[in-house]
Image 1: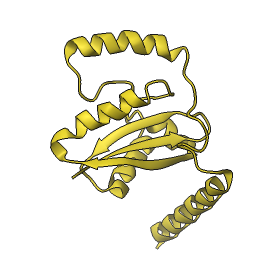
Image 2 (image 1 turned 60 degrees about the vertical axis):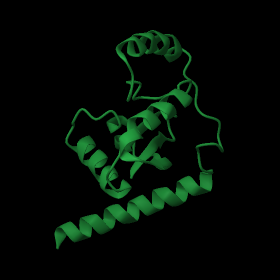
Image 3 (image 1 turned 90 degrees about the horizontal axis):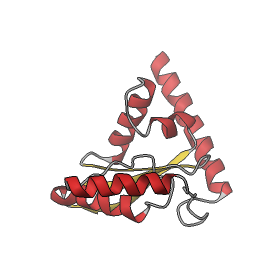
Image 4 (image 1 turned 120 degrees about the vertical axis):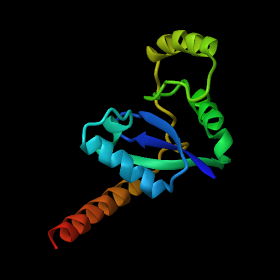
Length: 143
């Protein structure tokens, strides 16, 4: 089974959509490692701000994960998607999509609150949880 997921930045409204065969915790660890090591991961700018949440959009068969990722990329095309590259497209589709995305980039909007974004209280709770996780990691590293 594969997972199609979104990483959403609370500050800027940016959305990164990806797919993986890994467990989400392992995939997010890889995103964080890529951000720390300055790798060319598109999610790096969201991860570095540390004001994000991860939403599992769907689970699907491994064979169709790129088609499903493309479905979600197209569905959120009007929003501020940072990985606008296509997951599954023909050469002609890529060319037409590049033209369309240049046009849409000028009019990027944030998704409405309540659809993808948790409440302010949920954000504060998540921030406290992340701080606790970091402290626990630092304590474990010292030992």
